[in-house]
Length: 271
Length: 271
Image (cartoon, rainbow over all chains, first blue to last red; front, side, top):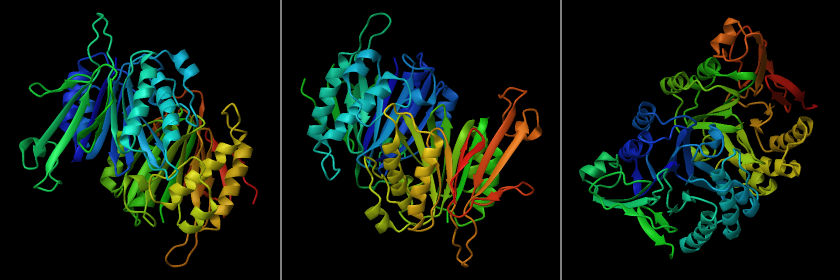
């Protein structure tokens, strides 16, 4: 299984500490040697960095130390290949433009590729690589394209949540389908159980809401000193496994989709 | 004016030395302080690295030294903003998927934005930023989409060259229109005169064809030791100004489009 991480915040944050935790808890201790990537939203565009080889401790930590990009929305992925060879095109996250906004997708699971290709039309989007995950992203974009308004503006978040939830339900029928999806406005996290080699199926995603004053140590540690001093930082973190002890990480329910924007959970799908 | 650089090669090359020359000759001595970027093709996907601030000597040289990515097709751009603020979305090159291949575009010039938006339909592609250059790229993709075969395979290079040449001719009517465009198979370079502050209009692009044995010093210097020892490396370089002395750099004629693939010039538009 791959490992997923995402962040939504009220003020741009560096996610440096969260990524170090992600590296330690998620990627480096596990069998995820086939690639890693991170997408940072930056004023509507996306800075996408990925490598089709192991997120080894030195390279990964050096990278996040050397590049403290500030962003209000981040999606990261560490890959253990199940479908598709080890290549840049098969490394997540994936990013595409739709309606003048950048959309980002990362998936943890292993879908039935033949059924996926038979039952999910692609519209105008075509995979560049060979993974089930990129195919699923293209299929999701084809559906999102249909609900864009004539102005190109996205419909209300509740309508997009309903679309993502319906898509997720169909995807679950094809295999493990934890995914993170950002549409340039909101972040959607879909939880599905993960199957381990020993048969145990723990929750596939966990979510944590943090809030702290601008002058707190935690606020400064994430490099948020550019925010107005009197304000409060709010952050939603999503990860395959809880990244910290002593904080109220909550499992995303099996089949649930959580929508976050500007550091707050703004909607949840009905179960 | 911005500065352009591209490379097409028979065997993957690092372009490290060419980029150092590009930095010295093109970007660093000139007023190009608004961003820089580079796109490397890698097995069908594109590694896109860009920054919305100056390609200062230290950062640019450190980057190409630290990241000797090997590629058979590279497009790079150093920006001096004429339209659009300094942001990641307005920094070139631009990369988009079409027909399951990544397409890359970089433009040097300043187009009449109002006429561009009135006379070039976009199809399904929408700019993320505000530049004339990204709008032109979306308009070009809309045309390319129309000539893709049902299989998604691109038509012969001569047909694509004719389309790019026709597009370039229309673009020239709107202002300086030097551009580089790669469609995942071939590289197209369109030459147009550049207007300097003193009124001089030198050629906007120059091209150089290099060929050397696998065991030559020049071959090894570009990091090509992975190629079979008995083979010959062939490289086409394109740049705003000649990057080296003592080599036969040839100006691209005003209005000409040169098509290169695998390190050779394979077609030229009629003038």
